[in-house]
Amino acid sequence: MSVSVQVLRGFEEGDFPALADLWVAVWRESGFAIDFEARRPWLAGRLAGHRASGGAIVVGLDGEGRPAGFVTIDPASGYLDQICVAPAERGSGLARILLDEAKRLSPDGIELDVNEANERARRFYAREGFVFVTMGASAQSGLPTLRLRWARS
Image (cartoon, rainbow, N blue to C red; front, side, top):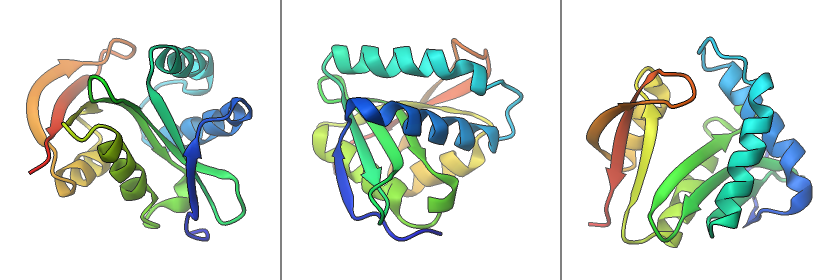
């Protein structure tokens, strides 16, 4: 585990390569049989589209000022599209810090889709108060997903 995250900040143009590296590394470890390296252009378009439509991208920096994770949230709709934390940051609390920031930016509620087979993520969201809404499928991979929702108590 690395030094704990000290700073959250908004996305800066120079962040994309580091965020894409994090995203690929995390998904490679997921066990899903998908070429995530080949999906970098998809991620670039996804993040650009998210920003263009008014979404926020919050970046968590490690103790040395390097991107260690990020979350995307659309404050208007409450949809959380991406949350990604570097493998070295597992157990550091960064995922919770990023999710708490998403909750702050979208206090009326958050919805997200999670791969049904991603047990680690499902346990995390359950601990954070998310509940099952409905089933679906990923438009990119066709894998089954679960729609989850969080609402302030």
